[in-house]
Image (cartoon, rainbow, N blue to C red; front, side):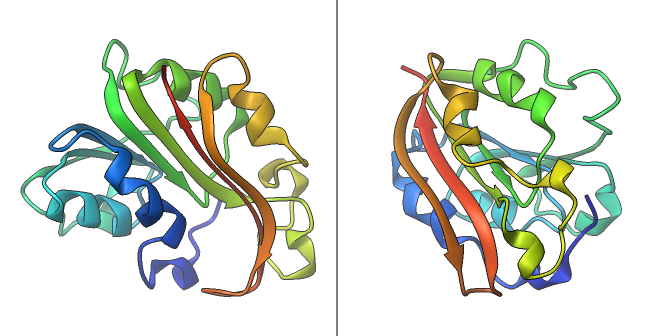
Length: 173
């Protein structure tokens, strides 16, 4: 999925809403981190942060307490095999085969925080390719039987620009 500079403005309100649920000082993975808006926020809050993206140059000025990894998680092996995180954050990115891996990479009590584009977004612009748009209830289905859903929304947002999104916060019990 192409990088969208419109989403570099500020950390997602959805992500910020769930930060207090993450174990203080815990290990957090920012998937498809882009320029690092969430990794920076998490690092400032004292979390141990790993950030992975296909293009690490977008996040060349990472803080010292953020480990940035350049990796193609769509075609290569999962670079965090055997690791468990207290939280995993994924925004504006969708690679369906990765969803079970993310759920399996959480510590007990760990939180998966997702927010990405949904069907209907094609009315507002990119992404418009159905491969990058969640079907109704798709995030819920992806974690059913694996994680306990704490929050879920499927809606149209106006900020930072109009978009159709699904949002999920779910815990490994």
